[in-house]
Length: 257
Length: 247
Image (cartoon, rainbow over all chains, first blue to last red):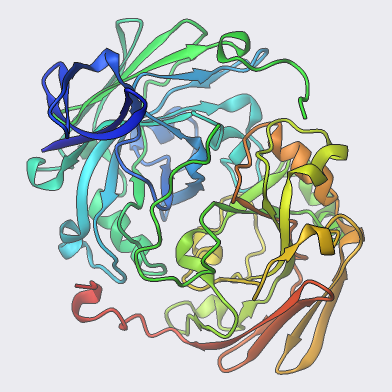
């Protein structure tokens, strides 16, 4: 089952996938472009993993990490399918990151990797933008790079774990304006999904709605206002996003209030 | 923009009922911490002093209230931290009106309330990578027993913060020693992200915060705002049943 959340007709609805349409819980069938997409779940804690693909780590000239490089996001960073993401005026390098998102289904602590599959509710697609101009070497990647409004897209669907045979054998692809710019496979993760759950639950409790963004392979390129960016994870869906400038986003150049 | 929807804590109301947003803290926001790093900020891996605020997040598994026990890891699980945990007294504001690129002088309009937080962490000397294992352990964020309405207390004036271990005063610091005042911190954070209604912003703690160990009663206090006291207990890791999974 693929489940989503959308706004339509002045209300928020749960929905399921019907090919190019969405079926609301009340029976209405709508084209996907007729609804406003929200992240498919109300998120709890959102984790992201940096440098988790051997190739991407090499691309960014960093050493292979000894333990997962983790950072957190606030819920305000998230937006859904077909969202607009702002590229601030004057930045030099802003790039997408196509990622497999893992959604935790129950409260758990000290979960070994052999049983980690039992705590996963499902999977989704994430596009976790970074603006590298703002990187600083304190708690890197710092939140100014990675916790910006609507710069972490999640969706369109939450796909039940039972429908994903092997989360470590999924192709990830990104297209910018229809041109494929990134391709990799979750088999190349340094720390796999089950290992990440084992690591996190060795020192903290995870709960339903917690999300782990598992990192991105090589092939990140700069994006510009007007670009359509599509991130896809095999068998999970295609997550569409639009890059806009400050004026289109609707934000002025000076402090407001 | 409406506040983002957040799943309610699944393991019961461990934190205060009003706490539904994201809890942010500021790193290196005490002058002594910046001075302690000193010339090292210009060498690897830091290369330059910080420019924008450096934030961290205390996720919902860390939230506790006054009187709760706080489990701490024991050797040999984490032998490097056998010396104890750091007890970090900090002042925090609860956002009322969303902050989007606000000016510092307008910061008071955006605050709903103020509280005291014990922001615990395992000691970590280097701050190059996010300190998730050190800062985000279960129960490592004990949030004040009540929130003081802003009408009765001004979070923007100077406040003295005190840390007690087993009733003995072990550390004092004052918000006058912040690198960024609360108002400036709110303005500078809101330049790059929205602080939503219900989010919490902690001004930071000195990194030489006192250490406490197993069995210690730890308390942090801000006069006029509140005092929160908790006891450090052994982390068993087995309390969630067979195979560690709550069923």
